[in-house]
Length: 439
Image (tube, rainbow, N blue to C red; front, side):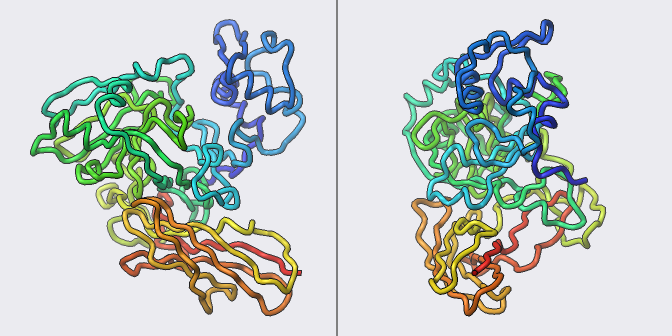
């Protein structure tokens, strides 16, 4: 069943106003007294959104929607994430419109938000003392390592790595697939700083029986049950040992934002973003394919063989998603823009291809009848997205659609039509298209 692509603030606060307070503003509340107060970043966030100081902030009841917002039905935006569209509030998920992803390096405020549970409250922690347990059946020397020790013992690496939700593009599938109805904006490519997971695993020892490297984290299940994990996934050993798989504490030269895993997360670019956990507490070297939450059933899996749209697929016939397919995004101009006739139209965007590189990008203005090759840059490092640009000329005024199609290094192209339907709406890599009215 579809969910709304945008949600107003009333809907955000409807199910659990105290939790909405904490997630959105950072307000500390008591569920017994329903009295709350703002401080630090929470107070700054609400003050900035309101446009001024709040003299009696300490007297504001918990769970109260500020009147400035309560009188509007406009979609709610997360403080520090201006322009993102909230798809779901429990858990909090939001995507970035394509035109706001024009930066070569995605700023934190433009990176999509994907949660499976309730993020931990990390405001008062000492990040250097944050500890991660390294264990599992195939770990030779189980241990605990603090973030400070990670930073002292291992070489630091900074890489630009793309991150994409496996369900990016889900809203286009028909029949509709369950889950967040992402359009094109569950992707980004920030710069990450941390240590190679491989270096940490080498120090702890990897047994010959190692098959998978998994993680657990500090976020909590939406039910509040402390015995349940909202998500625990991972990657095969070969992916964990790649140079680009990081345990990262920094994004774009500063500590990770709280919504993106502060103080420590895993990044395994080119695969669904869910394989890299935020707020890491454990790393498990398994002697089997990991069986954590959202590893089984139909989560992050597609039919092993193509099926007709709407088919019920047995869990045993579903295969785990690994490398993501080739894809491109038009980030300029914004879809729906009106432009004058006469001058060539500059068009640009990004392209990526999972574990592979992109070999070409083409654009079309005649609904895919003819294609023109765009200029494509090399990656700054493996598993970063690539930038492309083109100049488009139209024959006469009117309505046009600009389409983009990328091709990976093995010659596989984005499809013009939707790719194979699957029950959870994963891996939609159909050509991106935008609308332009030339006056």
